[in-house]
Amino acid sequence: MSVQTMTIQLPSELYEYLERRAKNSRRSVNEEVVEAIAIAAQERAQLSPEMESVLDQLNYMDDATLWRMARSRLSEEEARRLEELNWKQQREGLTMEEEEERDMLLWQYDRRLLVRAKAMALLKERGHDISELLAPV
Image (tube, rainbow, N blue to C red):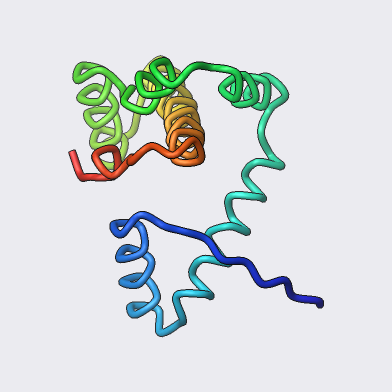
């Protein structure tokens, strides 16, 4: 396998996270970065055409819209309900209706997470400091 060398700039918080993961798994930071990129590439290859289209459209959005997308999250009510359903599933199981509700909330969460990540990447690429978006909520 041939190897290419690449220099990238990472926000400090992201580098520190990768550094901790590397230490915990007794690997190098380089190995952690390569694994993270490989996983992201695999996930991108598995996206639905509809989701690929949504992510591609972000390339054409202005910075203000990208900032809004990068900050979007599930509502407090949706997040609370998803947590309730997850706990209930572990305790006693879910009805078919509850499973459908949980699946829909998970789909919304995954979709929002992908859009947020792409929006952040584009903002960073456009020269914006996105460190506030990387801070724990």
